[in-house]
Length: 339
Ligand code: FA5
Image (cartoon, rainbow, N blue to C red; front, side):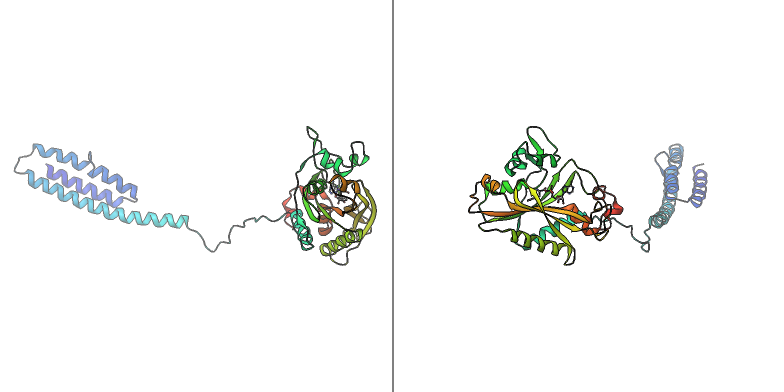
């Protein structure tokens, strides 16, 4: 009886094995046939009721069958495992001939490019870099610069006021005072930084950048100021770009001047970017006012100086022919990608 059951099991097992197609099929068959509750175990339970003399022979027969089936199961398992891992590799394969995915690489903002150049040019002339706070007191932003509370120049600055007499600095000139208060002449510094004014049109931005310059020593002259600025402009724009100095007024310098550069979009003909004037104003400058020298604690009879404040966005507009200052702050990658 057991012998014929084992023969049936063998025929069924080899039939199932011949139809198995995957690792999962093989694992299923192993459990079904040889598992703890599998078909072979069920048959072996019947050994208890056979004659004791027959048991060793039938036991041996069952073990042989178990080894035979195990060996075929293992062979097929290795085969299917190899096939399946090949298929997996093929489906996940990398085609090394495909072009690589293009990664966008960040680049410097045009304002940073211009700032770098300006700082480099003045550094070559012996100016060192200083910084000051964006949040200023009224004293440093106005009073110490000879702009008292009722002075009309305060209105020209369209200031963003904060609480407790604090404000967002409207220019980098407060750093002149902060530096003179703590250092003795000679002082030769530039101050790159952000400044803020409630201003917005094609040439005005509410946040923009200035580079302040201050040179204070025993005999600093206006011709040195002009020579320094002309040298800077030729280095920055090249020899042939037209520039002009206009007389101007700042409460903290006397005499004062403003410098314009010819508009490159219309070559001086007049267009929307230069408000039809053919020129773009880039900086204010002058000899440090005696009152400012005095309030900084120096003797104006012993010490003279010049100062200037350059608008960095305006330099960028002129260098790259940018028609509207607001383009610089819209973060449009099509625009920024050109620099
Ligand atoms: C001043 O800010 C003075 N502190 C400059 C100065 C320094 C004069 C030292 C004398 C001695 P002004 O307001 O003109 O000056 O600004 C200087 C430059 O900043 C301008 O020539 C212009 O290029 C730029 N500028 C002014 N307002 C704006 C704005 N809203 N957006 C962009 N650029 C501006």
